[in-house]
Length: 419
Image (cartoon, rainbow, N blue to C red; front, side, top):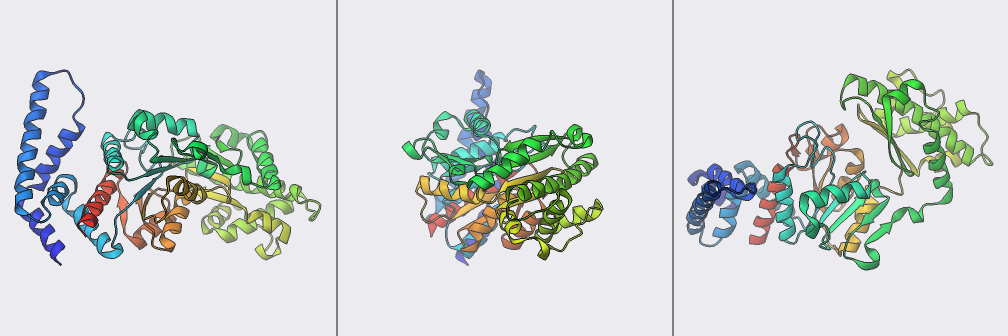
């Protein structure tokens, strides 16, 4: 209990709120050409040093750690960090971070990663913590905003990896032949053919309502329909529900055509097979089919083995009022993160995984299986993600506030260093 007693003393006896305000001001002070502003910054920096010295002197055996805790973490964040250390007995040695709706959120930060979050990531980098950015976006998009936000030096440091297009490839600058790994090279030809068919037809053959209400994202192995309405709105929910049914039917016919030599079926039967199989796999998909009046006429056990074997390699994901997605289960974020760890040389990971979607959930569950990480999610994450995060360590943060969890992880690592 000694560490808990020390934290109580730290936050009871010292003005940690002022310390944090001073630290934030010093850290995030914008570049200005003003003598008065620079003098104000210097005064704040001097006061910060004086207050830290008081904390440092009060804790002779761990003064540096405790003055940094007070300056970086709230009371709740510090105690959460100590609880995590008591539970896992180690600190985080790699960050695995989704971008959209996790690091940045269109709802609250003008679709930019907040400066506070970028600064905290810079501090983790300077402390030697590898960063794996794990996203469904294209590599060029990710490189662009990472270089803009973190700087070219960090992105090309050799300690940062990008898992892009939800696991299609891994980009880790500074690692020679392993700098870029194209994971889809190992994908079988028959699965490639199915995705080629789905992608070529998904918009051209869509009903007019879907063509007007959706746009296509992803790559040839990740076909995602997104709404042309505000995410979360009633209009977005309606069009994505219809898009899910349409994608299931399209996938069913594409799979039946690919394995046609072994199984004969008309389009209606093939669509029913897809609906039955994926409704059995995912209660949310089943709920959408029921609400749309499109429940399948067949039992999932009636799906022929060759069709089922192919479905087992393909994922269908539903994100309420946000997206309907078809992806390869052999090209996912878990596979990408595993490859990134391999390139970065992380043999014994204890990862902090932050994300909001079902593709992020797979990574969270993967690290949880053998106690090799913790998970955090924004409060607007998908229901399954929130269920997992609340059931494990309850690291849920407000929209646009990923920095709150990063501060908890900072505190955890500081406490772990004390032993």
